Length: 205
Ligand code: CDP
Ligand code: CDP
Image 1 (cartoon, protein in one colour):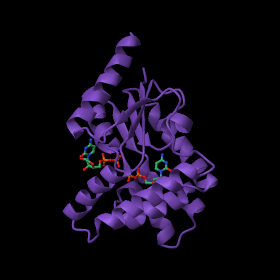
Image 2 (spheres, rainbow, N blue to C red; image 1 turned 180 degrees about the horizontal axis):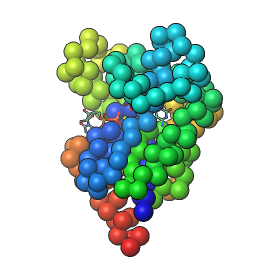
Image 3 (cartoon, rainbow, N blue to C red; image 1 turned 120 degrees about the vertical axis):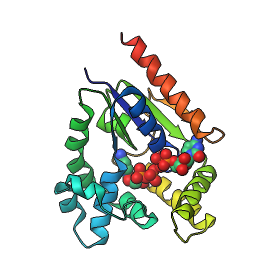
């Protein structure tokens, strides 16, 4: 029987790390839905119309080089405000969620729009300053030339665009479990998420 874990939150809150460990722990499949928007954003930067790119998106696009750059993150949040882009990506995400082993999807609108009936919803957050310093550490470790101020400005610009858009804005679902990781180690955050999912699994028996 399928079991759906919806994980939402702003950039560098810890969603990806938590999703991967939760998926491994429970034997679920995992989809980082940000990659879909990043892939469309990359195509837009290359000159393709965003709506056509979203409609034609294929599995290989999600493995493309350069999806993790700050430029593509900004482009992703720009194409993500276009309603037809979002609509074109819905079916793929919903069918992924139905995987019989159970599925973890992480993004911005999983608990609110993509899987409103998810078995459990987690909203992972942290202050913009903490998130920016985590993202800065990741970027410099992977050889990007940037500054803490630039990364903070990028994070805040993306937060604003993601939470203020008309369609599927970033916000916790009414029934989401909130986890603020500002003062938490990644291990503690992962532990809190696994405990919450485990609790729901046991309730369902
Ligand atoms: O997927 P999302 O953008 O929400 O975040 P992530 O890629 O999982 O985490 C961003 C970075 O923050 C990673 O390097 C994590 O190891 C780190 N992190 C942390 O140090 N402490 C936390 N409580 C959560 C994430
Ligand atoms: O890894 P990080 O949290 O920095 O970003 P991401 O999850 O890869 O998402 C990149 C951008 O895609 C976000 O800033 C959103 O604008 C958009 N996105 C979205 O609108 N809906 C989703 N379900 C996932 C991502």
